[in-house]
Image 1: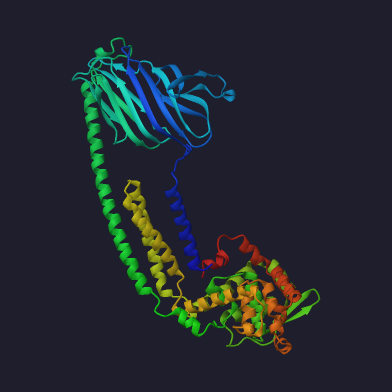
Image 2: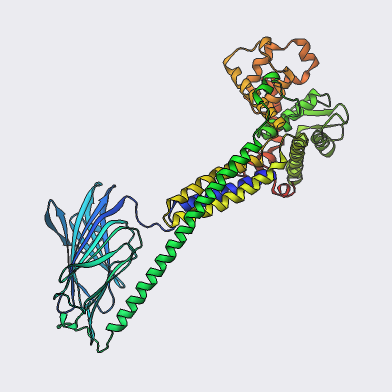
Length: 587
């Protein structure tokens, strides 16, 4: 594989990985077919320090579900008692019974499981993809703590282990007595949370659009006389300490918010500026590199492509078919009277008719030297000997094959078909695309929609950069279009009967290059009626193209002999032109 294709492949794989990482969250545990539209919590602090809780959870289910579960986190000093589960149907509460056998659990029951500091409530209710609202009722013992100078209630109503997004979440906390100036309330969690008093003794916490793995915690300080019967007590004075702690936390959150806003502002300007620079840069580069010649006019004036060699034509059009190109190369050298093919019993013999000279290109000279001199006797070689050599010296055989293809590539570039000057631009655009992509990810991660702009520019820049890595010169592009037109013309022969008037392209060129491009071999048979006996006598190589029996013998023989090349390519990944790794590093 040449450097261009290596680079394209590596960049494509890296970009694919980034796109996948951008498209999917790194940690997925919950099914996207379940979400929570409303989660309402009514709680009451009792005089003994217990917290009585009623939760109303509305699940939006888009698939069939047999159960949902709720995890309640507690510490070793607390207990969770009096757990009850109800389903709300048409405003009525339908109580669920408790089961002790999960495996046999049916709809309308719940089960409990204790796991370290978690109480897991499994609710069994068959769903066909609709909304279900459940009420979960329980009491957390000794949750509030009575200090010497204050009472404290601190509880995570929603743990960060939650794996389901929530549209709306609210908590009401009812205190045993009305508030006074010693009552202080704090909320920890999302920055968009609000906390206030709805009544003299009712605290309200509210949050919307809560993502997965987000906790919501309430902390309330109140006079210790609110919980006179509490057994969870301490002689410490902590009121001022807790206030300082919360004030520091508020300042820290405010600083984080300020810092976040600064970053968002920087990323917004960066995204917009880089997008503008990217658009202007692409427009300038495209206008500079825009082709100056009228390709259609050039092609229409002469549709016949240059009769170079099958290997060069295939490299130019990226149409490599290894067995086809080998057969076409052999027949092309027979056509040029450097080789001839003789049929032997159960074998084919390739004979050198004329020594290599300046009329041949470097890769043609190498090909003859490879199969005739290195594998054969110096004058001839039979297909069976090629097959035996390829099996006995498979590494050397594959190296020589790759060297031959490398020389064909070199010839293509030597003819000025590829614009090597703009390849640096292609590499630079790939790097710029990567930078734009990183800017886009960073901006989108902060929820700024402007991050989409550099992402779009990144994709466009990346694609355009890839085209520059293999961009053809005007001459190369014209030849490329001519060959593509030739391939299309050949494929259209399926629909018509071929006559002499239909032969737009020279017949010898038509047969050789159609075979090289891997066009259906049966199509070549349709040209038989366009060839006179005299032409066949003068061009005996045509027998191997036009007559199916001969063609099959040649094809099967070469395919068998060059099997290591086929096996190597079948075990490679992702490209029609495969070369050994050893050669890739040296091309």
